Image (cartoon, rainbow, N blue to C red; front, side):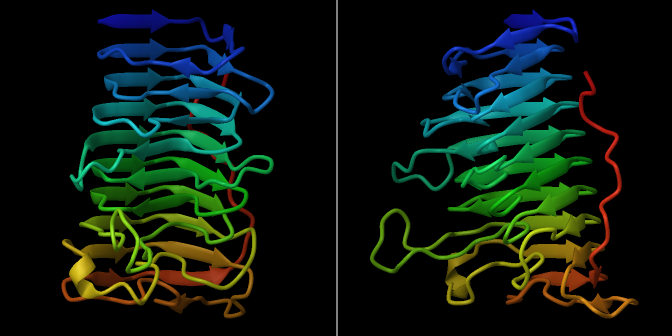
Length: 276
């Protein structure tokens, strides 16, 4: 077991990528800092890793790389600003649809795609059992959260999700002749009580499955979208419109209720994450 404890005022300055491959690591306090947006924290093939009250300062990203396995990675009470992803949780395709599992992001405050990144905020690819709760995620260019390539059992609740040219997430398709896989297979997903602020761009879905051409056979679980609020720049109805731009298309077993889109307003200040 490795236990790293840093005072909140401490900064670990990166001059190259920081790669953790050990299991059972707990990192508490302090900051992992770059300042140039060129270096990453990599968790390739690592399991049982916890970051608690850590600031990820001006990094290129935090990701698992294209590892072969990994499980039980958690980010809690932490903050970050990075050019690419905060959490590119992905597994290399080797014939198995699921290789990574059990990820937690809770009470975190992160800016992704900053200032000119071209990746998604939190990206889930071939992973299962994911919880993203009580957090703020901003992206400057693409989806703030995206889940695809066979990810399943994903729970996203009570988050403040901002920006992104496409705002949140979802499964779209690859071409029929591509491998792997032919389609973005998607398992069960649950979206509850999130607030979505589209501060970049217009049009498109707030939360949805993505490409309507993906056949029902590409899905092996239901999607539940309930109690979410979206604030959109081209919404003109001051009272909001139920269901607008949520969950299209709906497939058998899906549920979309009590979701409302309102005119855009300024997001409230977020008080979570690490504040040192």
